[in-house]
Image 1: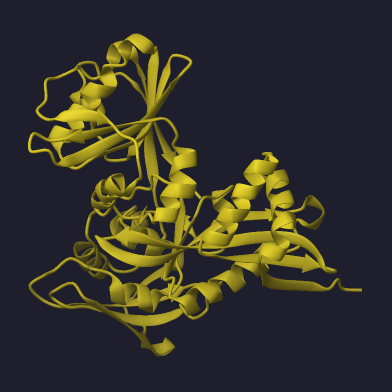
Image 2: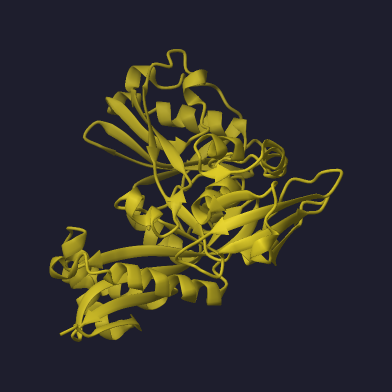
Length: 397
């Protein structure tokens, strides 16, 4: 006899069950005080929480956080898929797949045109249309290889108080990348304060304007930089000089930075330990709506090409489209009849479209890898209209 399975959204009435499964699946424990704080966060953070019930028992769960992200300097509504977990006795029964399909439908209805997640396995989420969109560099620097201290104009002050001043600096910095989060006050309160503890140094330039900050902590002779934000080279130089002032306290420093960071080039000895780490995945939820908001590169003339898009988990995206980009960079993604493919059609799946438009992979590389197919001319014309911008995400969920 088939088991009764129900996929539905849940609220505070299932908080205790949610937390039991989360603590088991992600291998952590919460004290009574921490659970109370998590309950408050559960209440306050905008999110939709899903659960799969088998014979009325909670068997699997996931959360979609209501977030926003920067892409091309513009703000897009984004669904952050998080907390995906299943009790072992219910695994490999397709429960998470059913939750994801329902979540995609709901995200589309809410106007969340794109979704991000941190994968436990990249291959698993590729089956549902997500694709790698960002990576970061991790540096480990021995104290004798730290950047040389340099004189700088302005001052650095130890910062305490609310995060509003830091938030303004962060948003300016974050908007320069694709895939960063728009941080709300709740995000600073519940996420940043807990994941990035320690000291804060705030840099003011010679006119007294705040231009950058560093969040860091020192433990066991190691300085861990949790966040380094700067708006110009003067701020970068000043903050690194400040960091290097800690050399008598530490043996080494660790920091994660965007993939385009060039610190080693600036060091007198660049032979520091560097790792490049694939990080988050993304998938466009609503292709027509996403592309209508996307800023392509301006050009003297209009471009038009045909796209055949595959998307098995979000069938509203699947089909043949005309992509028309006007001289200002505004695009129109118009569905065509299936028989309107032509020799210049570019074929791709939703994951390839996502990583391409976010800027993580260029069309020519995707064609080389066999992830998109088509003639050279339309692929080159598409590539010329996609802005080159580094992806980055200094957050986690």
